Length: 269
Image (cartoon, rainbow, N blue to C red; front, side, top):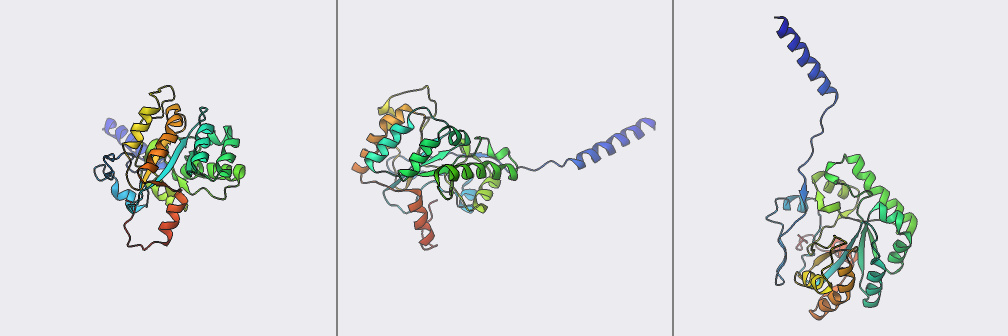
């Protein structure tokens, strides 16, 4: 009897303790991926299990109008010496781009940020500390995003940061909802390859083939600015795209179209 009484007291204390510290239920986390485009065919997320979330929260990864337009984006977590060359090519070729930056990049490269905006590019939000956003509370998510937006505005004069890209492509429903509720848009991508290892160089021809081989109408291209291969291949990629009849537009132009289009038009996903 005494043993049963001790066990009952233990269970009551344990239950009370657990009640004092409720465990927050987390949404399922996903890592962005898709069936790659090939021979001009559109990529697909229908096999990945999160297409319903992408559609529900208006996350974007390609423009579904069927037009031969491309959107060039770069992820800038840190500077590896190649962004000035990338900006030189974009200026020469008259191509707009969006650069998704982290807090480290904002603090470390204010002059490059100013140059991006001065030359007509958009600065996107890649979070302050590049965490797995699916592990954070709602408050921490907003803080990660707001710190980047405020710093970019202060340094460059860009009035607002509209576009957000989840670090490492990891996301859950909470993140997509918060980004939408903040009046921003989650931008994924439909063309990418393994280009973020700064010490792995396969040459500009390799980078060229990886990107051009995935061309499709409405593509959002993701390149990492730390890649020497990307910097060297960028001009070739742009020239080949134009040779194939593609044009380059900014995310702002795409957003403007969506704001004034018929809601019954085919959406971008």
